[in-house]
Length: 459
Image (cartoon, rainbow, N blue to C red; front, side):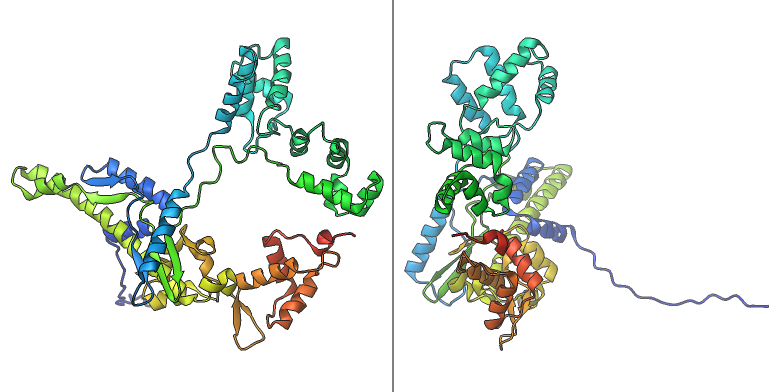
């Protein structure tokens, strides 16, 4: 008979339990600046011991200097840069509805017609186009209880309102397609009006295939004249109201700034665009006095402790972000002179080891954060680059540097004989960069550059 037995063993396991304060610090570190402000306001609403004040542009920034000393000129220039950054933050522009309303007030439009135009503005897509069919618009008008909607008079008002809307600024709003938006932006009194309309209505397909010689021949034009007309069309907007829509992309606000003055490089936190976080002094005074009973004291102590935890998490966020930004600039020394083309391969694991932080901390610190540099505002993640093999002694090049090299090669090519992807691979190889053709094609597409066939200029 088989014997059944129990096998006992002792297993030891070590679990890391994160304290609530550590979890909160991790959460705050990962928040971009815009989200941090909203999160702080929510915390303040639920905690009377936490004081969150609106951003104050006059606040100075915390600076980290990568050299032992800092000249007065460098400090003054950094201060000027910071002031310019704050002053560059745009005021909230008028919405499309506001813009249309101002124009309607100056036009002789009856009450019912004005109501229909306002209704149509609400039906526009973010580009300013009116994509719904007339039937769909009428159904929406009936549901919205617009005057005379669904009646014969309502159909007449709909047509008139569309015509009225299409006469307003920005030119092209209310168009039923992007092509119609371009047509609405043309000046009927222009001597080229008929040719421009023909290019938009009859030759878009051929132009998209770069068949310019064929189009020019059909219109009886020289290539130079056709190019001039295409230049006119290139100045028109296919999305006429994109810059006025209320859901437009928000302005990027950098979290850190880097500046170079001679050999001196400084990195600083941009504090003036974030709220200040403090503990209510009255709450601390009450807690230190003897006026509160045990229950009230316990309640207030909990509030003060949570407020202090928030303040410490925000402070730690700034300290960690500054350390990471300094580390990035220190590991990318050529960036300050060469820009993105000077980036070297760098992983978060490498920087984490240098700063004695976890790679996940580096990832959270750079997530959604950006840096103001002499070359514009750039995402911090962009400074972490994978490598592309090289044929020289350097061993590897950053992908961003290779991407920029591809762009420079195409910028400098002969338009009448543009470089194929294979030719670009050969040119990169001559400079010591071993890159596959599919990689070149990928970078070209990421840069928004068409193929050599589409780039060819006919002369």
